[in-house]
Image 1 (tube, helix red, strand yellow):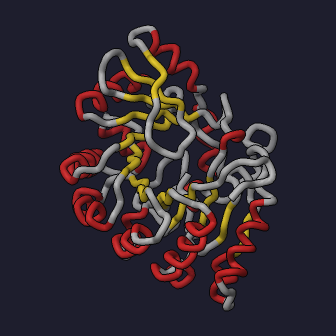
Image 2 (image 1 turned 90 degrees about the vertical axis):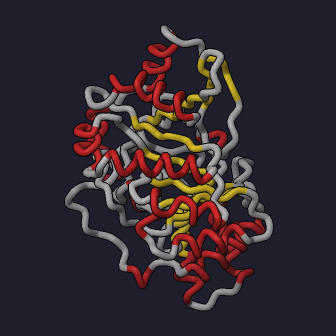
Amino acid sequence: MRDQFNRDIHYLRLSVTDRCDFRCRYCLPRSHRGFAVPKAWMTPKELARIGGIFAALGVRHIRLTGGEPLVRAELPDIARRLHELPGIEDLSLSTNASRLAKFAGVLRDAGVSRLNVSLDSLQAKVFERLTGGKLHKVLAGIDAAIEAGFSPIKINMVVMRDVNDLEVEGMVRFCRERGLTLRFIETMPVGDAGREAQNHYLPLPVIEDRLRQVHQLTPAAMHGSGPARYFRVDDSELRIGFITPQSQHFCATCNRVRLGVTGDLYLCLGQEDKVALGRMLREGADDEQLSQAIIEGLRHKPERHEFLTAPTAILRPMSQLGG
């Protein structure tokens, strides 16, 4: 699949739920109650059907997202169905890892090979203020994922000024000691929580410059379909990445679309344009009609997001599409 700007779209981020057991300050407001009802969620069979259509169109990588995917009991079944689709070469998962200690082995057996884990602080009290969750559960989940054989495991740290920016070096040590990959991410003004987090926005070139004062950073390649710029740290095996949607946007190389839990296909994280694939499916559309709807939708994929020029344009919380 190619959009009107000749970008090769081969990556589908698929949300299995918009619910989450955390309330991260930059993602989901504590007061938010506007979740989709479970009967509106795409079923495992429906997700496999839509995933198969995307695979036939050229998608090779599917990432399971939320909300928090592990709050959905059917997740292993969903993963197994998607892993078995012809053409899907890579099935990965984004998680806060709070429930991963229980499910790591099950998900590995179901065909998930790679993990992205959100971890914004290594201080229990700071972590709880940021997320509402318990740090020890996340650390136990990471240990279980290592034991289960996931590789790579990427740690995602949203860096915020005067919140956790002084923990950057500690996170580097943590990941280096455990053989994890570390990625720093800028806040994004998506939804009310995201816009509030902009009060703590920190451009990542500041962090990169700080790290270069104490480490040698050498450009490096890293398996995955995301937009991070990766570097090898000193002569170690550690790779760190920088994801910079605001300071150095990467829209020219965008390779993805996102499917919400009710089957709405979103063409850009930074806009509200969507294609109601779930509704079409439940109204009886055949595979050819769904395929054509996807192709037509891609013609409306924007050249770039509008985080800076229209910061109040996105009403949905980040949790609705998993970032």
